[in-house]
Image (tube, rainbow over all chains, first blue to last red; front, side):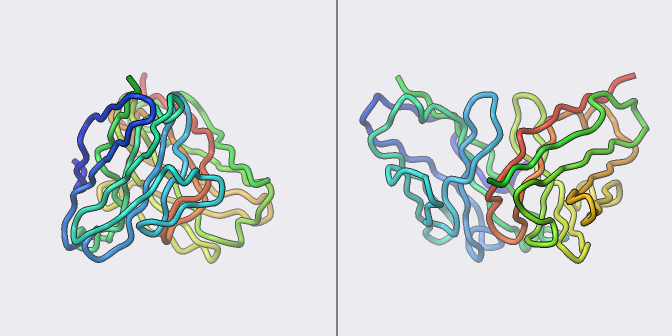
Length: 112
Length: 116
């Protein structure tokens, strides 16, 4: 069971803004960077946001990340059909034995 | 262009050892950290562990006693062994570049089924 909680689903029509939350605790998001990954159907995950809010080269600026306290958010502006995918947040957790890297529960984004 | 490719048996019998290799092209395994992740069908991602260029490893506590990772710089590969597998270990296994922060590049994944 993941220590990072995301809503199971989110949706919007093309052009809309969609926000995905990631709730953690002081032992993970509260003290470590948050990363976001996009997994298109049938493919491997792809890094979308690094270090809370940094977009790797090639990631459209429609995607943005933020962090506040023990929660983080991914915002997709100007939703497009190609954004239909599963999205996962991730962080390190210092409370758990061995300080593992933990993924969120995942959010499926549907473009209506 | 950096590419990662997982390889290994697609079927492993219960109680046996799962062995996978990740071949890296366009980069050197002597740089960076390298990570294994898995994903059961229809479920979320689970971090298995990482290895660095010196061969130092860090594993998920939930799997730690069963996981072994290694690096082969001569072949530019890194490997995963998971022993005493059960049906719960059936998943798509991914290798990725990175391990301190983000996982910047992923292999396409390989399905491993545990069944007799």
